Length: 389
Image 1 (cartoon, rainbow, N blue to C red):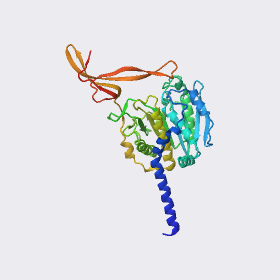
Image 2: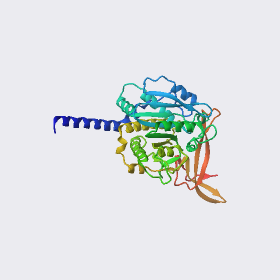
Image 3: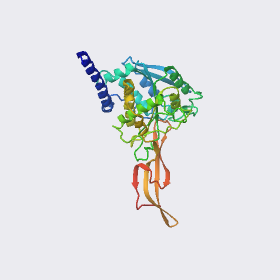
Image 4: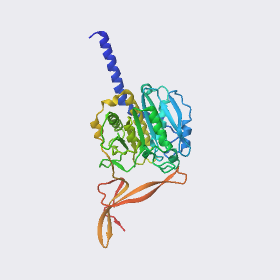
């Protein structure tokens, strides 16, 4: 082997090694330095459309960040489209399609701050992403629902069931952006019930992923396969911080849903559902995890490292199960007509908004009574020897 060939081999090895090292360390570095990228003007999950607009009106140092009008909601509220980077790979994300699911919106604001930061240990990461990827995202697709912190839009319609008829302005905006960008990858960002577990375990499903099906047969084509591989990568990265707390959402085909149709339209779509984490009512820890997932995902797309993952790792992710109560009272004795019975009591704390929809309180409800031995609680009390009078 001549000198030039040896040098070329060394350079290639260094380059590959550098990508691998960065990939392996990136998620931990993001976790450790997250406070410097957190957008502290919004630190509660119930924030208004106006508060979001105020943050987006900030002057950005980077000319790689562009914010444009995408359209307006039924009630006339602005819906923005943000672009970061100028690369050839189009990636699209949207959040708060359901107005009461705000975790990822906060993470997207953190993402803006991350890419708007100066020279630091992430400079190479930013450069690779912005050179290879054009990342577009719509934070708060459903601003009318957000104002009331409700799932549906102003006409009480679930936008995520309007992908076929496309009757409502929010749906039309999302489809119009999809038509113009033809994104290679997409992130559909939601919040799920905090009462899901990872399979039949006691662990809350803090994050649930899905590469949605595009037909009832749940076939796997190259588009869906790429989403599965990226999820397999993200699962490994997030396992460092929430081990055992990552599940897979049901892949039952829903022909009216945007995620399923994005796959049909040619985008490798990753559904991210933010679930439960004990004593994390404002979802700030899950916000951090979403931020790490998004930056890591963009880096993997830019570097192509997701291609190294296997479908088997995706398939091995346990599915969601609804097996959690907020409080589970075990082994309660109750008496009826002089006879004793052993029961368990599952209690949930349902979040209720106040009149301004910015504040909330918890309303305790007995959800189930009986043999709940196969269920779990965020908090559990063994009531052996205690009687329910």
